[in-house]
Length: 330
Image 1 (tube, rainbow, N blue to C red):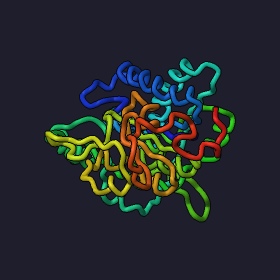
Image 2 (cartoon, rainbow, N blue to C red):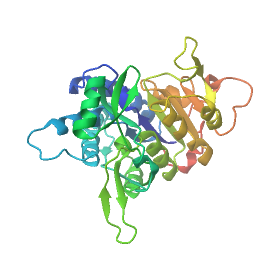
Image 3 (cartoon, rainbow, N blue to C red):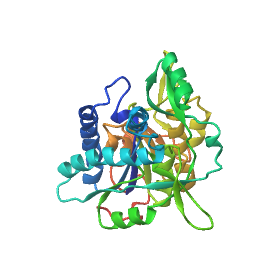
Image 4 (cartoon, rainbow, N blue to C red):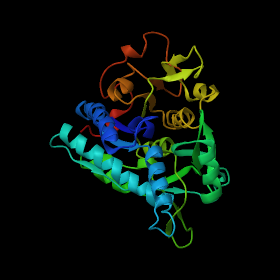
């Protein structure tokens, strides 16, 4: 089975944690163990990852660096986060998959320069700000901020991805049997001139879940796996009686009042199941194999699951969740 697995940025650097390299290394260590289990089970694997906390940190550092005449643009900072997170993942996976090639690819994602997201920034990045800090950043640096729980955070444009520039390279690497890390942080956002073909970076952050869904669709993947810091999609989220969803359709997820900055894009990405007939699943970062098998997480299919045994009774193997014979097992 060919699987695209998307790691949440907040799963690699959780709320309230210091953004130290050692902290992220610890979470990557756990994530690599979970991801390696997919490969040893015989699946092809492409890994994407979020970068909200990381790009926010780099943006703050760039803004405050007295040596710079102007801060680095978000597209360049996005490329930096791709390299930073990918090298941690590569090293961990090489240690867990001896003899297997693991390759990270700097990846660019095309967006429409006329996307309405540029007029209404809404993607949260960076750390938490007090009211005073937020107002200062809005005045001094022209930031837009929005409330995230009890605090404020910076928000930036998040246009929809329209194409993965390095798609042929990802396909070629998969054909060699490599585990591929691509489209980190949703990919470096770029626009392409329709007349000249010239590619330019643009000040934005692409949602990694939507980019992962696009990548999975264009790679003819059998499954899209969205790994995060919660075990399931929950109904009545934020109340005293949250209800974990074990199975769902994309339509059912659209009906839920899910948080815009966190679970809503994941639910939207799960429409991959509708568009392709494949499997989407949202589950915990530390149990990728269990999420793909349905023993944990929320399993999402285009049609409701038939009556009978629960997902724990699903057959355990590469053919259980899609047309695995389309792709050579590695």
